[in-house]
Structure formats: C-alpha cells, structure tokens
Figure 1 (cartoon, one colour):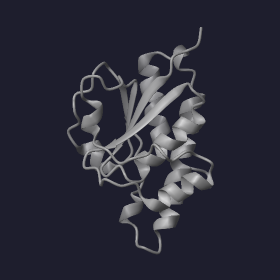
Figure 2 (cartoon, one colour):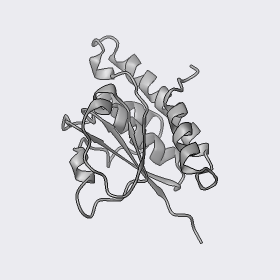
Figure 3 (cartoon, helix red, strand yellow):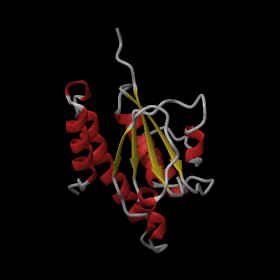
Figure 4 (cartoon, helix red, strand yellow):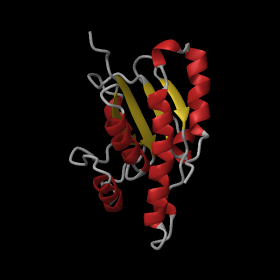
Length: 166
C-alpha cells in the first residue's frame, strides 16, 4: 500500500517569491511524499518573473504556480494541511486563519528578495532559493513516521534556523 502524501503550506506576505520557491522545490524534491502549496496574507497577485526563470532553469514546473490568499486554504473543501511554514517575518507575526485539523507549524524566515534593490534582486532570489532548498532537503530526509510530535516540532524549528552552505 502506498504512503499518503503530506500536505504542506508555505506562507509569506505577498506569495510572490519565497513561498512560491518553497512550493516548487518541495513538489520537485518531495518525490510524491509531499504535496506543497503556497499562499500569502496579502498576495501580490503575480509571481515574480525572476523566480519563474530561476525555477525553470532548475527544471522545475511553473505552470501551476500562482499568487493566492491563505484564505483559500482555510475554506471548506481545501486540502487539510499536515505542516504550515511561514517563510517571512511579516507572516510570522500576523494572525493566521484557523486551519482545519492540527497541522504542525514552524517559522522558516528568509530575507525578502522584493526588499532588495533592483541590482540585488536576482542575487537575493538565488539566496532565498538556496536557503529554502537546504531546509526542504533536511525536511524531506526526516523519517516522519518515526518521530513523536514534540521531537518533530523541535526538529522543524531547528531546520528553520539552518542556512545554506553556499
């Protein structure tokens, strides 16, 4: 019997760069064990074009990526989330919707590429990608079925403090 996929929601304010990157990377690296989604507290309504180019250069599908509100995932009929990660400081401090079920939550803050100067934005997107990919690889290597809830909570918080090595 096949294992079920864990649903993971990445939240950030604009759902334009960081949470989109995390969604794409986890769907690519999660090998069917995870189904990733992303959303924003105040979605910008568009995915950053340089994020799409970076993901495409790394052979990740982008056709289904879109900027959307977190409210979409708090509605009846939305996928039940097993994990919810905030990836920016603003979303971490906001009042989130009430999520159905009891998802594990953690804050995996990453610097906002949109806050960078025009000259720095591409580098900041690449840095966000590397940092999120590092954390996601650590997350996907966890043997979730073997870790108790408290131990898993601690491990998710540790992963959120991990920086990329490049």
